[in-house]
Length: 203
Image (cartoon, rainbow, N blue to C red; front, side):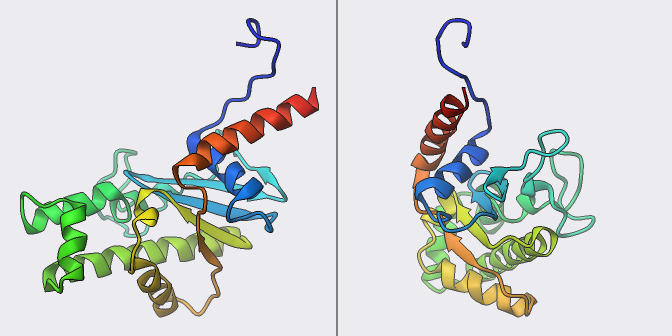
């Protein structure tokens, strides 16, 4: 593309771009070091330290989906067992919903939980607890100023946010600074634009 157009080209993944967007005009404008965790079909992550994205040796820095939270747990497509993504993603919620009723999905599961269905409530509580454990591990490992939670599951959080904050306090006395993302589905596009702007300035 740089051979065809007189502009710099920047390539990065969607969650890293979303982190740049949230850092620029979103939930992390006042933090130089933070983690973005994106909860959707899977679990994505990005790490920003002193204002810079950290990519790691093989580009895998921030790949929070494969933190092992339950040793020997559910098999993951990465080859490990017990990864966070198997317990705290939209795919995981759909799987748990179908374990209750074959025609249920995650939306039906959440609705049933909110209506007082005991079995659905138990599944949601376990999901929130597993997510809390993942967040605590991230805090212990990286010690960020802030963890921003984004993705479709967070946008549809309703009353689940308070439950998550409570679950964190149940599992640790460590103080976590958690905040929902502000830019929604636009975060990646906005961050990509910002990366392009920064690359242009460096030329």
